[in-house]
View 1 (cartoon, helix red, strand yellow):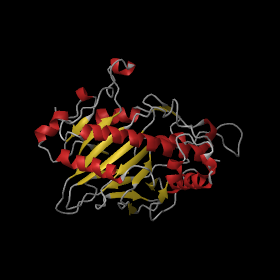
View 2 (view 1 turned 90 degrees about the vertical axis):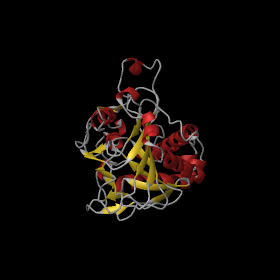
View 3 (view 1 turned 90 degrees about the horizontal axis):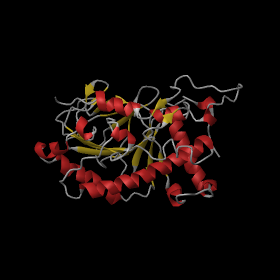
View 4 (view 1 turned 30 degrees about the horizontal axis):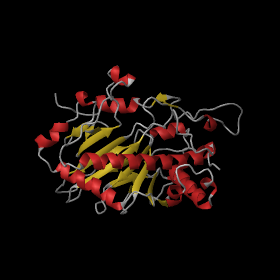
Length: 344
């Protein structure tokens, strides 16, 4: 079963809301469910994810298996870290020496040339020791610097990252089934060892509403983003085809999921990422914890072979809106080397 059809590519509706999908049938089907995908409940989930990716580019997931206490705990630890003194936070300051991992103060992250009003910690998959690219001095190869305070920060977040990697893989398996009929199209050399990114972001209190102050409008460069946001502060907005901004209001116990530029390429334009932004006008500090499920660091990203076929013509056709191929690490290297304003 799959839903790939190039005739439906690049068509998005002017949606007015973001769908909520109960993915519990995927979670309950186990880690290797060849029979599970024939279950009508699993088929429903696959179809709903497919339609959300085609028509909106965003969706909420519930029934994902991540305990609510865990989701709350990581945000709480984020609040505790960002309440520390600058000296304490600067112990894990982002720099070339830290392989572009670590803490950024307010305004250092840049979106489309404009400084974002938030502070953050960035963690990437660790690459060190005898890893070939590490030995060559690649800018993103190194180990994450972890804060000493709060004391539980490192173990809790390492467990959380593992849980989120499993969840991201499960959603990507559903997307694979929707596009190709096979559940492993994004495993192996494509995203079998995802170069994940996790950001812990704090948006400070503002005294008056300032449009686009939190994070400017953009699409995510990667594969799949899962956002753990505050339950009581709305800030995330998604742009529909009519140019209207739709609120992604918090729904407790859910993740907001969106697709990125890499999936646009692998799907040959069947799925298109959606522009979004963060408006920060709250009287309370807001912490958001997005987890980015990315391709392998050295993956070659080009349309999947089965999606290059034009059903109405002979031969192959690459959708002209996509790059034919890129290396998956190029956008992240660019972000690290040019999009962070770092003090001399």
